[in-house]
Structure formats: structure tokens, C-alpha cells
Figure 1: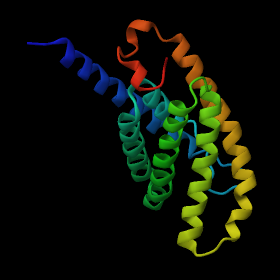
Figure 2 (figure 1 turned 135 degrees about the vertical axis):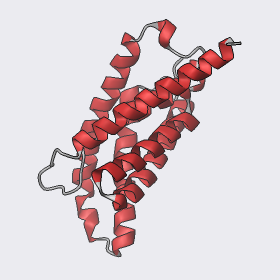
Figure 3 (figure 1 turned 180 degrees about the vertical axis):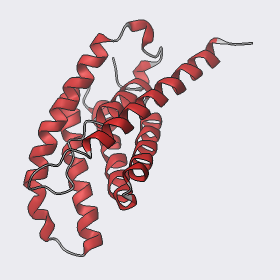
Length: 181
């Protein structure tokens, strides 16, 4: 017997799988785009799908999307060391975004995304500097923060317009848990 609860759970798992897959594709595609003068920097457009998971389904589900995306992305890209930086920064930035959505009632997704992107870059840089044993690489911080602010604004706008364009019947019934009011 199929109940409404199992249908909702199945739909949630399917949507989270789609968001993870799309995030993985974006993660791999953006790793092919070199950013001049900032080796290893990426545009972060895969975070569109993590933020959608956060807003639609809440923090635990968004953390799963980030974990699976970064693990598979690092594995497929052939750069397992990337997993340490991306996972740490991704988990912290998603938690910070959720905290902002909880604490600041009418905050825009653009502001949340910009903050998350800048934090993500700073955490990655901190992890790298800690492992390399040098603080000299913090010279990249202003450039990474600028790149994070620009890409975060684009991600925030993409999330905003995606949520506005989705039919209400597609959105989760308990969407208040995720951040949409």
C-alpha cells in the first residue's frame, strides 16, 4: 500500500538525487574552466543545487547533497585531495547559510549565497594553509573573496528565480523547515 508519506519520501529522495546529479555535473564542468591567476579556484555554480536542497528540504538533506557531490566530484575529477578542502568548506558554508536563514527572517537568497561563497573560499584557503604549513597563501584571500561574492550573487539569483518559477505543487509541503516562508 502506497501512502502519502511514502510518496512524499520517494519524491524527496528523487529530487535530492536529481539535485546531487546536477550539482555533480556543474562541479565537473566548472573544474574545466581555468580562472586566470587563481589556480584551483572554481566558479561555484554547483552550489546552486546545494542551496536548493537546503531551502527545499532543510539542513540534513543539503549536507548529504554536499557530501555526495564533493566525494563523487573529487573521485571523478581524479583529485582526491580536493575532497578535503571541498567537503570541509561545503559543510561549514551550508551550515552558515542555514543559520542565516533561521536568524535573519527576511534575508535574500543572494545575501545568504554571497556569505556562503566567501566563507567557503576562506575555509578552503585556511585548510590549505594549515596543511601546507604557510600563511603566505592568504595573499589570495581578497581575490578569492571577490570571486566568491560575484559567483555567490549569481548562485543566489539562480536559486531565487528557480524557486519563483517552480509550480507550488512541486514544492515540498513542509517547506517551512527548509527556509521558504
